[in-house]
Length: 88
Image (cartoon, rainbow, N blue to C red; front, side, top):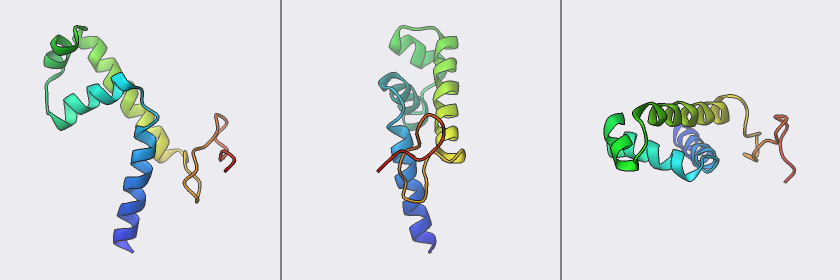
């Protein structure tokens, strides 16, 4: 059961990550996979550190909302804008 729960969590997380735009995915990759600092990411992308911070906060909020607020119903279908499960 534990392995199934982990697989379900990984599957749901992949689906939620797909909701992020390219810039959000890139910034999260640079920050958490490559473990780069916000100032380093800012220089790399040619944007301000405060903008990097806003991108990270917004992307993490999207991930949390998708995982915690019922983005997926029992069949793991993405929810519609009103929170109801989207038609299959």
